[in-house]
Amino acid sequence: MSTEAPARTTPVLELRGLKVHHRTRTGSIFRPNIVKAVDGVDFTVRRGETVGVVGESGCGKSTLASVLVGLQQPTAGEVLFHGQPISIRRAAERKRFGQDVAVVFQDPSTALNPRMTIQDILTDPLQVHGIGDARSRAAKVKDLLALVGLPYTAAEVTPHQVSGGQRQRVAIARALALDPAVIVADEPTSALDVSVRAQVLNLLADLKRELNLGMVFISHDIQTVRYVSDRICVMYYGRIVEEGPAEGIFASPKDDYTRKLLGAAPSLLHP
Ligand SMILES: Nc1ncnc2c1ncn2[C@@H]1O[C@H](COP(=O)(O)OP(=O)(O)OP(=O)(O)O)[C@@H](O)[C@H]1O
Image 1: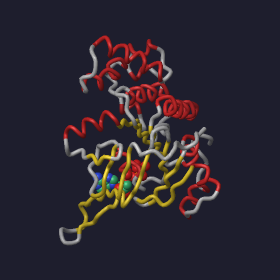
Image 2: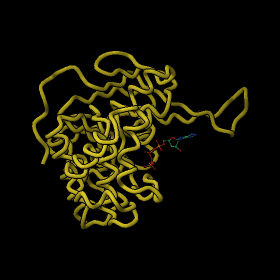
Image 3: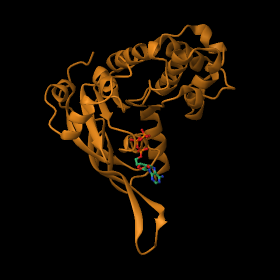
Image 4: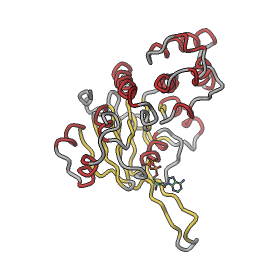
């Protein structure tokens, strides 16, 4: 499934020395308790590659994702887009980032507004960013639906009138609406029926190839990550403890924690 990693071009998205620390309510002002959700991570993704991020619950995957998509300001470290440092504190950079880096969440039932038609859901990002007119937006919706393998008639219904797998296709189409360079998919198949998971994974892999996207695929399931990723980062307690080509990690894991993950529960994709 995975394709050969692209040549060593400049990463489209990069994190350097990323830290996200949270001060919790326990502790005191003299001795605050700090949760180190992400604690010194370097990370890159290039166009045309899928980087898998895997680790158990609480290791910091979602926190990493929220920084990658500009939803959270790190405590320390840099976020670079095409080699240029960016900050979501600056409104213009935040807007640009929202256009260039898109996210697909775990559960499309909660990520999509149940009262909007799929046409409106897909038109909304274009309107918010002031892109095109009514005619070009309608054409774009048609293209997006075709891209994710949905019939044009799906535009007329609401998300709850289609199946779970089709709903996630709508969420993927919405993520593609602004022609992003990177898609961050955070557990995109975990809430889906086992029978449709492989279809959605195949769709993400096809889109990465066709659109030359940088893809970050986050999951607790190492077999699912292996299925889609060119490169894998293994996270443990807020750090990347092992990183390398997907097949290399499986053939000869170097870290004890990676070995533990590989020996753990059977894949949710192939239970
Ligand atoms: N706002 C916050 N305040 C305090 N602690 C937090 C906050 N956000 C996350 N954490 C803690 O940071 C750690 C990493 O959380 P995160 O959600 O990123 O992990 P995860 O690997 O995505 O787990 P899951 O798969 O269960 O979502 C956890 O211990 C979590 O409890």
